[in-house]
Image 1 (cartoon, one colour):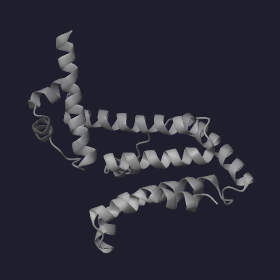
Image 2 (cartoon, helix red, strand yellow):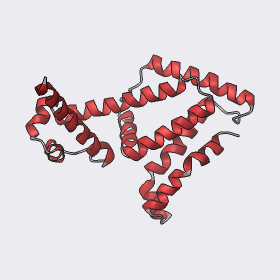
Image 3 (cartoon, one colour):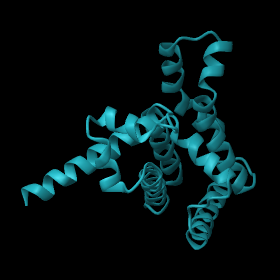
Image 4 (cartoon, one colour):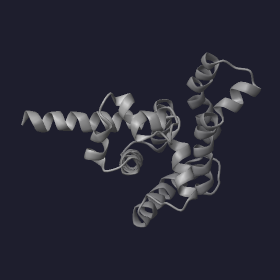
Length: 197
């Protein structure tokens, strides 16, 4: 029993360390040795638990994508009012972007390579539910009339751009890290005003 517990601890330590290197620090090319050094374990343990660095990377990435899908579905399929769902989604997106600033850019790069992660039937069910709730909000006069997909693109753009362009924004606008963080803390209110009447 104790041996299995220790094995699980080591495996989790390696996964968490690699995830931080990849998605917190943006070191997508981190070697097996760099991961081992950061985790303070022997390099052979990475191959023992995960077979290879690439397999470890794939496992971590797939888990991150699955967690995001689960969270997004939990929000959409909840009984909360539509506006509250959007607020919760913005909060969660900012939390994820602060914790793992390089995750989203990596997801986009994988999609550009032709990797799709959501099952077609899950995505279609998601879109149908979203459209129904969105169109109801338009009828109530809470949202300007537009295609539901435009609303989704607006949310994604308004949330993601400041994080994706952070180095550019900080350099060109000459703002410090503290000023950028303050800007982000005000961002949810700005986004909600753009999205809703």
